[in-house]
Image 1 (cartoon, rainbow, N blue to C red):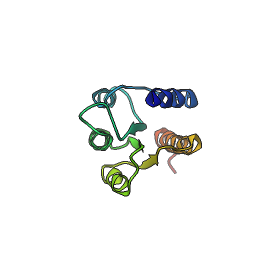
Image 2 (image 1 turned 135 degrees about the vertical axis):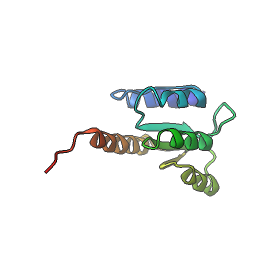
Image 3 (image 1 turned 90 degrees about the vertical axis):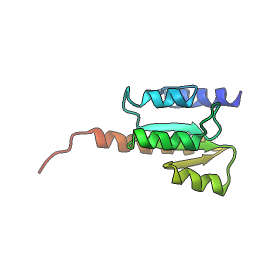
Image 4 (image 1 turned 60 degrees about the horizontal axis):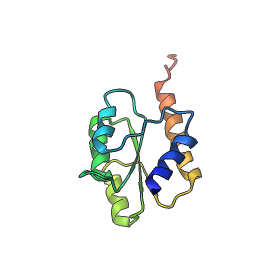
Length: 122
């Protein structure tokens, strides 16, 4: 139930962006070749054989430019260290404040838009 509430909160809070919700790690990885994915938000605990750390590693291998947020209710220093070792840029332990997630999303997407803009040459 919490996963559904969190998903709807994210979709509602970031409705001005093209939010793509997927239900498993295979579907997440399948999105990468279809369109640019500036940001992936994943939970540590996933309903598949791949946890959020393995998913982060797979995303990093397929799409190095994608920034990754790992959220987790299993917040330990070991998981946090492993997250960064697997290519996660942002680690948010649950419960987290929506304003913290908003800051991360806006920071990443502003950076992404800056990278996508043609740069003037001197």
